[in-house]
Length: 135
Image (cartoon, rainbow, N blue to C red; front, side):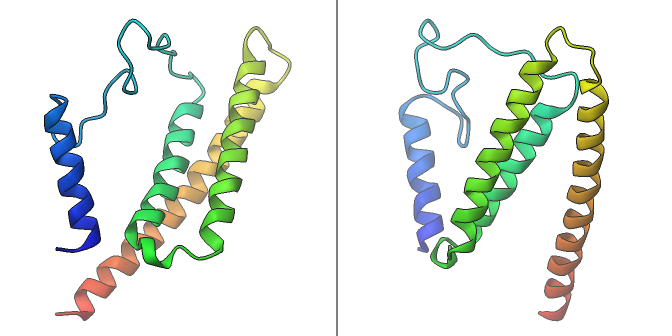
């Protein structure tokens, strides 16, 4: 059994022990519902989706081959955390502000969407080509 398969089995066993469906994430982050922080409303500007996408992409890169996590990945993780923090600060400045921030956020989101779709398309083509070449 590979290291990744072993980790997945462990994760599923832990999920069953605490009464979760396999792969489920506790909605309270592992704390009791009473102690969990209040749920935050989703951003109307798409910042939450961008944050989720950035986090997911870095996590996927890390999990694809943990043995190959070279110097590049920790740097990207750090830059991702900084970008997420800046996005959250920018969003917090939006509360009650109409001084052009919505336009700035819209521009950031549009560029990020363009970049992510371009990268996703390239990755999908590369994976598909690799699969076709292995037949």
